[in-house]
Amino acid sequence: MCGIVGYIGHRDAYPVVLKGLQRLEYRGYDSAGIALFDGAELKMSKTKGKVADLKSRLESEISTNGTVGLGHTRWATHGEPNDVNSHPHYSNSGDLVIIHNGIIENYDALKKELKKRGYTFKSDTDTEVLVNLIEDVIKEEGVKLGKAVQIALNQTVGAYAIAVFNKTKPDEIVVARLGSPLAIGVGEDEFFVASDASPFIEFTNNAIYLEDGEMAVIRRNKGVKVRKIKDDTLVDPYIQELQLNLEQIEKGGFDHFMLKEIHEQPNAISDTYRGRMLVEQGLIRMAGVDDNMERIANAKRFIIVACGTSWHAGLVAEYILEDLARIPVEVEYASEFRYRNPIITENDVVIAISQSGETADTMAAIKLAKEKGAFVFGVCNVVGSSISRETNAGAYTHAGPEIGVASTKAFTTQITVLTLMALKLGKFKGTISISDFQFHLQEMERIPEKVKQALKSDALIQEIADKYKDATNCLYLGRGYNFPVALEGALKLKEISYIHAEGYPAAEMKHGPIALIDEQMPVVVIATKKGHYEKVVSNIQEIKSRKGKIIAIVTEGDEEVRELADYVVEVPETIESLTPLLTTIPLQLLSYHIAVMLGKNVDQPRNLAKSVTVE
Ligand code: G6P
Image 1: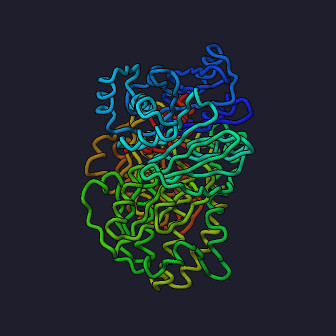
Image 2: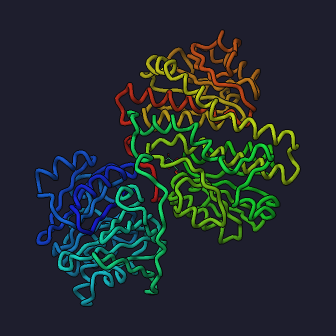
Image 3: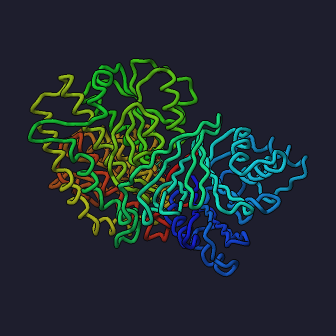
């Protein structure tokens, strides 16, 4: 949560920081602020609201020149999202300025101590405590900023990615991370700091990703010195060459990132299996699995840990892994798993799924699993993310940057990776026949085309969206592989249109949700031909006889459900285990169009953030 950006170099910092903040708004958008240093004066402007609100305010409040800048976009934790609590924060003297992503848990005790020493606080934030603690260390111990940051951080408990600037030593920025991501862009005599690489990708492809527990002093014209916060050891920083390009993080003609990302799914899925799935040779290559085959295939149990949409992908994977690889699977919310003293043994393989690779609860679950001796396999989208580095092995989804807060292509590509893994394990263990294996590969190869087909239902879905956009509740039903898709469809609707929606296993409807059904209630039912079709048709009958409105997702050519439903949306036929890759498409489009029609902010829904780096 929260996005931070910094610049020190030879160009104007303001446009770099401003654009950087816009790219990081997916991380939070409760408030925004920028501090600039013009060689003489440190100036700041900040406001509740979005970066766009900040732009107009800042340009009327302060001059925008200066070659050092720090910016912040906030997802509020401590203190309500108002102007005062917005970042950056000054120290009492006004010499230091800080931006912070994370939480300082012992801020209250530190604040009391600082108050006794005469410090005053304008905001309710933990961050203002930290910047004053750093100032106090400088004053008391007579040390430079880097050392002071280090000493101060060693007194804190919590998580952070910070950048601090001291106007009396204006040629350096000090940064540090623990639990929240921080990348340093290394240009020609200029440096960038950001929560991810998107703010600096048009200026440099070279980045240093700080590891947890590391800090860096970045000196204009001099370079970057990285050391461990705890014991002061110097670290030789690894400069990584980034593969990201600008086009990937722009809207490309679509009205919203979410819509762009929905439409990217055919390519995203093929990018995920490209190079891994060798159909003619009847092979799947996945280095993370190949290198650890014995360990993974001999697991007594898989425990999948994830949050949000990634957890739904985990539920689909449960069906696939049990079906094809015959290994028992448990799917856990990472936040529950980490706090309930779970039974984990060395024979377990924990699969952590995370688009961002930064989710705090998933990270904590991984650490717990590793402590108990389990092997941890990561499925992440963001290359080099904290989770991808913490896991023992893994597979990237290669979906490209996902910026819309409501996850779409991450979901389908996570399922793709996990399907490949299940097929590979099934083949290795002999739990799937060669011909079935081969058939799955061929069918997987057809999925991108079929997703394109499914996307063609857009006009029909707009009509459905228009009809039901004013509903206050909505039910999503599915069975088997499509039960998690129902959960995901309901989540999408809730997230971006704020309509209450529930996903349910279709057969469970009669144990409760059926009481909600009346002529006002739209019920989205996934009723594809493969997988309990007749049973789902009976469920549809039950809804119809209670006058519920039925929107059915069916296999192309289905006639039976068409007679019962108010609307049918067709998806191409495929094997049952791959149907989630198709049935999810109309549900994503439905939530998208409803949200647009209701005038909601699709890419930045209220209260949410894309990357949840606090528990
Ligand atoms: C947030 C996002 C969701 C996402 C979840 C897990 O809640 O808004 O879209 O599914 O975090 O994130 P992860 O990056 O771990 O997949």
